[in-house]
Figure (cartoon, rainbow over the protein chains, first blue to last red):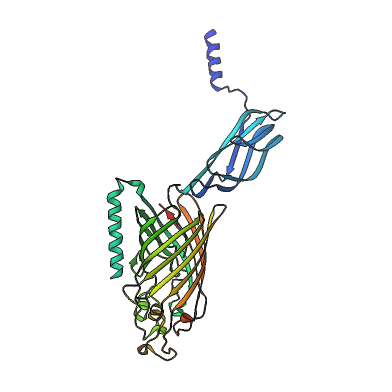
Length: 126
Length: 281
């Protein structure tokens, strides 16, 4: 009998996960291409996120805060990305006083280039 | 013969570069691209308006620098888009050797062909309707070594002065003053280029003169003095992804009366334009 309870507990522990807000974050385009390494890459990024219940959340680009929403479960937002290197887009759950609580979801914006920095840029002409 | 010279020199440079590549990779800087493009050309010579206008064409780009040696491929020259023309591969190269080189200045010996040949049989070979060229002697492509000084006044401005002399066909001279300004607009590179060229009477008469033997109805004899050309062009480059770029450009050329008074030519302006996509290795 005791063995049977232990087996049930073991089975339950395998399938049970602590309650966590399911979150989805997407960024499109997720890749920004510039002509030469070291040059600022520009892109209009469309961001969409969804969480299972309304919360106060903020979207960050690494450490830079981009936008916050209060008591919201999903949103779409577009902004102008301008950077020389790849960045992490992070959806943070915030406290009421807008302090970071924990990460809900992440997405990456990759910056790539056609030509590496050491290559000379050709002067294009007729 | 000059084409052979160019190819031999090019082969020699490639060989030297390949041998030394393993030893000194950093000294060898190269860019290779293969593209497909469409051009449109309102040529100064109406008979030479390309039948390829609007037809996709192959475009090869291979630029390199090895120590003082270099080769350059223009986006297009004289309104021609492609690197392969009439079976002549890669004949739009400028080969050069830098006599002095610093961050902003360089002085170089250069050699290139600047004027395409034309004439009754040349046009036929290029698939151009040549009835207007009937009775004309063939004008051969030239081969003009010269000296070029370039000065980057800033990272985005280029001033260039060059003088060339043909050594194979007309033996004429050419002097060019070039100013280019590059500006970056988001992910675009935009180049505005303006160039003033002077051509000696020998060159103008070789290509645009009409000798007594070439006179026909509606084509009087014509000989001229030296002439000028003023070019203004805009070229834009945009990255599609890590390996593909698109490049487009439009240019307008104005010629003085030494050119436009010739019975072989039409009135100003000459208009050239192109759009291409290129895979960059």
